[in-house]
Amino acid sequence: MVNFYVITIFPEVFESYLKTSILGRAQKNKLIKINLVNLRDFTVDKHKTVDDKPYGGGPGMVFKIKPIYKTVHKLTTHNPQPKTRVILFSTRGKKFNQKTAKRLSKYKNLILICGRYEGVDERVAKYIADEELSIGDYILSGGELPAMVLIEAVSRHLSGVLGKEESLEELKGSYPVYTRPEVFVVRGKKWCVPKVLLSGDHKKIKEWRKNIF
Image 1 (cartoon, rainbow, N blue to C red):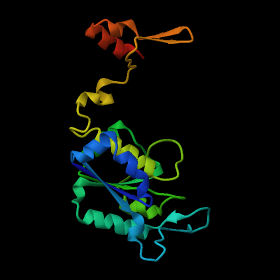
Image 2: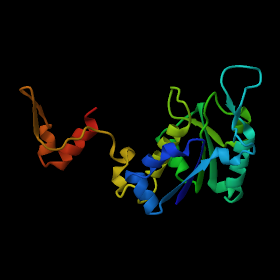
Image 3: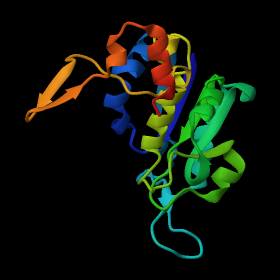
Image 4: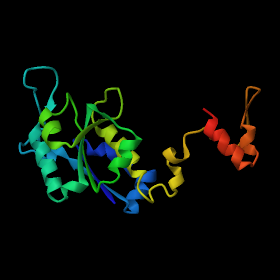
C-alpha cells in the first residue's frame, strides 16, 4: 500500500474526486491511503497564517517555511526515510510523466506539498523536498490539481488498482477505440467503425492498432 500525504490549505477540494471511481475503490480495498493534511493546523497564531510578504519586494504572498517544516517533520518522524519521498509542485520542477509515476509507485510514503499564491519559500525546495515536479508548461493557482494528477497516475501502477494490468496505456499502447453502434448517422453522413475491427481476425486487429499512427 502507498500512503499519500497531501499538504494543502484547501483539503476540501480533494474530497469528491478522491472518493470516486478507481481511487475510491483503491482506498476501499486498502491498496492506497490518501491523507489530507491541512497546513494551517501547523501554525501557532490565532489567524493560522501560512504566508507572508516576499523579501526584496514583489507582488503576492509566499508560503512560509516554518509550518511546512513542522508538517513534513511530523510526517517523516513516523516514516522511514528510504521509503518516503517528499515532493514539491513547482513551475520550475521536472516534467511529470509516466516514467516518473512508475518510479514513485515504488515508495511507501509520498508527501506532496501544494503551494499557493506567489510560491513557496525557496528553502523548502532546497532543504525539505526531495524533488520538484511540474505537470505541464502552464501556470496553475496551486499544487492541488497536480497532486490529484500524481495520485491517480502513480496509483495505476499498483497491483490490483486497475483490476487488469492490461489497462495500463503504456502496455497496450494508445490507439483509437470504438463501440456500438457500428454505423452512426449524422445529417445523412455515416460515421463507421473500421472494418478490420469487425473482422474477428485478432492478428490483423493487433497490426492495425500498432500501425494506426
